Image (cartoon, rainbow, N blue to C red; front, side, top):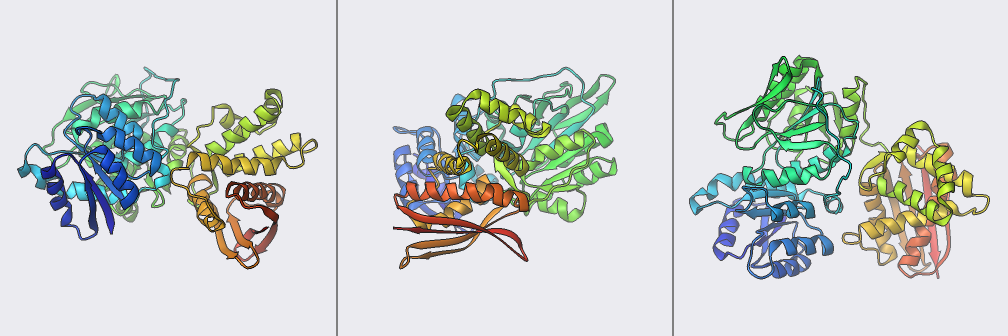
Length: 538
């Protein structure tokens, strides 16, 4: 069951929404709130999976409630409001605080039925969003903007509907400032909210972002969103490709297949289609067109797509795709194809959140010196040096090889004067993770260690897994096994063992239990390399 909390100062509107959602047997309305303060209290007590929230309410409003919910118990929130026709500060702020989707409040009760199916599907999509990632959807303002008046010869078309905003939050900020294609986005969203949504996206990327208008030229380093009450069309002219806006009178605009088809015809082999979370089979015909003209198709993997069973799954079933990968790898795949390079992905690849790399660099710089830190960074390979030198983004994922290389170089430089430097960095890893994800991560006893490791696996170190977790109260001991796709014969003993010891030391200190002894032993079986970790406390 999907537990939903309804928040609206109108008793009539709460009743209407309740009736609208009640036809789906998998949705349970667990409570209602008439103002923001009541909403926060009920989120904490009722623990809903999804909250529907009006923004303008007497007394404590929805914006205050949204901010408190994200601080105290991050929960997917869908805004149900009549605000949004013009760019609105309150709607922009709501997106910045982590709203996952929006629904336009109908002008009259007779219009309720028109949004019922869409509303239910957005509830379903929101319920699947990982709560740890909610903390990462807040806007990180990008100060350095880039623009271009160079006509684009390649285009990236992003197609998405329900669950799309959260996928876009992970894909668009990862396009580098050196990105040289033109991006067209077809996202299903009530047109009243589109201006504020695009303003929000603009703060997350160095690229220029706007809603497309008739006559816009497709320049490199530019992102154009199709209007959502009409459909973007691309036509090739002597000056390059130019936007036209058409009203196709279809049930739902923009017509995603139409957008893709026009881009395929205009750019031919220079078109790259990205299919993100969404309902139905929108984009299947478009993907066929892209492949017909020799372009590339990238599909968001089930591991990150809120709604995989619709658009992503149907494109995969059709066979008209090249790569299937999680949202955090899509920008890398796009830029590889733009550079005419092959791209293969393993969804089980070992990745590291940027916060870990950033924390390690800051720790060495502050404890030792900027000069020592610069010396370490200078000794890295050209690829690692470039990634770290380009200003690591806290919530981006980076290749695990960069993590292991950085830690190896740190140990080479510091080990003689501090043999425990990697244990210290392991402890810093855990401290940083707890600090960032405090609102959704509770570590109060040894029994919470497994959930902590699982959180590390899902959010901070994809490709890491914990198993065989056992707590023995009579002997005051805990034993668990760690596996990682990133383990090699070289790094598991040299780096992973020491970092993991640091994890355990900090965690026991954090839960205020005195650690008597701990060990991490390397093993290997038919599944591959693993660490068998054990600890005793007094």
